[in-house]
Every structure is written in structure tokens, then in C-alpha cells.
Length: 304
Image (cartoon, rainbow, N blue to C red; front, side):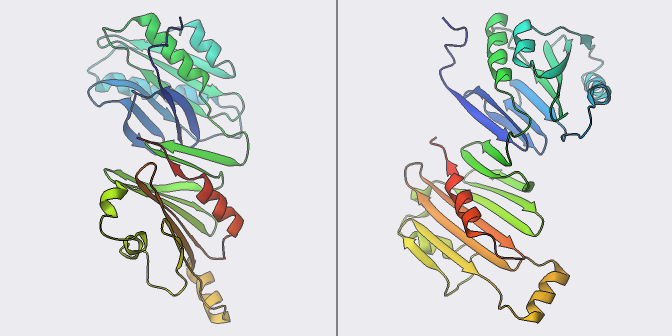
């Protein structure tokens, strides 16, 4: 029997350039632009911190930087001693396309991997925290499976995003600038030159839509101004679009102020997952409708 067979469900995390599969019971406890903690604040299972891809090989430099980070970590833990450590062979095999260095510490026990991709030169720091009551071989098997799915760059020009119950795919040129994850509401803003894409998620839809239509909910949003361009696709899809008149003055003003004056918003009710999802674009020039429609099609919520 597979040592990980009692972990019945695995799901995917994809966040700001990295992606991997994890046991579904390892929930996101803390999220940052280049940081994730899985587990809980009091019972962490794993932390990962990563940098940006580099044009040149930088494992040695990144190793020194991350070693410094680990030493700082040790000082914060009241002089915690860090020792060189050789990871299990299964972990190394799972990261065969990466350069790997290992560290360990005691009281509480933990292990760290400094990983550098031989393709994109992105460096990542993994820290693992096995429970004292957990069979070490079992924990090693779980980590081995997780590491075998680890990806730190996209193989094409599209980048996946998968956190909590949100799943999306955007052109890799769009960089995340801000995000908000709170009970009942999630939002992520992405920018590239002259374009902004925002993804929203509200829940539970059954409560938010109680006694009113989706169009009425949409009309209550602060960024949804009244407009004759509103399109009611059906009871579960509402779209709104606006653009300035193409006068020379308007075009000059938009250029000088870098104002994003073309707007498009599509809101839909996904009854299967009891969510309301929205995609909003803002741009200096009209966004290609095929691109916008593809982003909408790739944006979904997973069942709870």
C-alpha cells in the first residue's frame, strides 16, 4: 500500500510563480507575495519562501542569502542551532532538476531545503515541521510526493493561480499587485503595461442574492456605475462595459495621466459552488475581447 494512501485528497496551490500539489488537510494559514505557510499558526506543516527568476545561474549567491535567512531564523528562536542535513533520497529524486541544500534543527525538530531551479534560476526555501506523533517515514513520503509536483516556472506564456477555492489562468505578463482574502470576499489585482485585471469572489451567493437579482447585487458594487451599456446575458450573468469617446483631447488626457479609461466587467452566479465571480478589466486601450473572454472562462471556484 502507498504510504500516503491515508491522505485521500490532494489539491493544487499555484501562487505568484510557484505551484505544487498538497494534502487537502494542509490548509493555507498565512499568505504573502512570496510566502506561504500551510497548516495553522500553532501547528505548521510547511513554509515556503521564494524569489524571482534570474537570467543567470545564482545558486551559490542565493544559497548564501538563504543561509543568512536561516541564521536569522535561528536567532529569533533563541539561539536555535542549524546543522547541515542530507535530505532523504526520495526528496532529492523528486527535485532532480534542481540544486538542493539541506538544513535541520532540534527542539522543535524541523528540516529546511534550499532549492534552486537549473532552468529559471529561481531559489526557494522550504521548511517542514513533522509532528512528534507522526511516523517519520510517512511524513517523508508525503513531502516526497509534494516535492515531485513542485514547479517554479511556467512552461508557456500562461500562469496558473490556485489558492483557497479560486482557480484562474492569466497571461504570465500580468503581475499581481494587491490581494485580499477575507471570509466571504476575495479579490486579486494584476497589472501589465497599460492593463489591469481584477478577479473577485463573493460567498455565500444564496445569502447575498436572497430577495434580489444578480443585476441588483452588481448594481450595489462601488465600482459598478449605472450605464446604458449594461447587458443582462441571463439570470446568472451580467456584463457592463464603458469607453471614453475617441476625441483627441480624451486620448491625450489618458496618455498624459496614464488613466485606465476603458472598463469591462462580467459578473456571474455559479450556483454549483454557491459563489459569485467577477472579472473586471481596466485599460488605456480596449482589451482584446478574446483575451478577456478566455480569462473569464478560466476563472472558477472549486467546491467547498
